[in-house]
Image: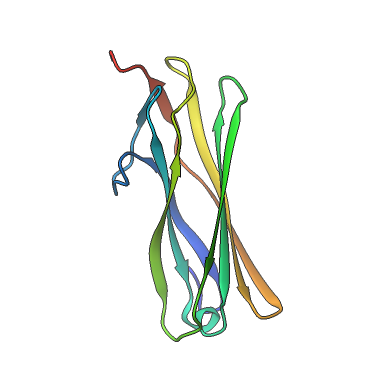
Length: 131
């Protein structure tokens, strides 16, 4: 939960088809999403003009990393902002049983000031379509 002058990533998780629910398994060769539930405190939001979300998905079994950067603009206004940011990833290249984890950083810019937050997901397992 973000303080009034903070930004935070409250939850980061794998999802399928832009879903809201955590996906404990991801299908090999299928597209998937990483969903970041972000929050920007009401004071910071009063000056914030931009954000950048950088999401990395690492296959811990092979060491392969996929990355995606999502920039966005904000209009300074009062009130807390709570919103999901969904990042689409292409087909999962993995082997049966590979262990996957997502991590991300969020940067919110307010004039000359920036605020950062980081998060990691729970693990997910790669599975074949036959499973």
